Length: 198
Ligand SMILES: [Zn+2]
Image (cartoon, rainbow, N blue to C red):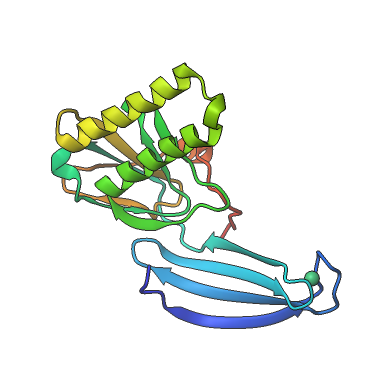
């Protein structure tokens, strides 16, 4: 993500919705072109009076909604995965799913990186609950981590599924199956942000 190129940069002023300051809110629009993801519009606002800040991204690309499926094991750990902000990642065998939200990032990683993210999320969930955690939840979490380890060691093979209603995500592997999603399937996916019809 360090290869960002800014094509334009507009600065506007507006009234602040938080402190009500007159023309204290700077609005910046940036168009980014990100490898694999194409063009996105980033809008960020900041108030010089109260310090309020917010930012949002909108995909300007509208490729065909697509699903990639790849059987993963220890031989696929280095396979490149580009996940846009609008993508959903699922590993059905392990009951794992990550859906896009307002704060979700697009990133380019590999299969091992995706597995590590799931592992960290599971560990975080146990720690969050702290002392309140039930034996059942803990066992379930440890079981998932054990299964992820098995996949990494090559003792187990599971499907990795990447679905993107904007078609800006890729599992970059010759063995990955690409299917186009029907409109109905695409509509069911979360996108995580406002979309604009073109
Ligand atoms: Zn303000």
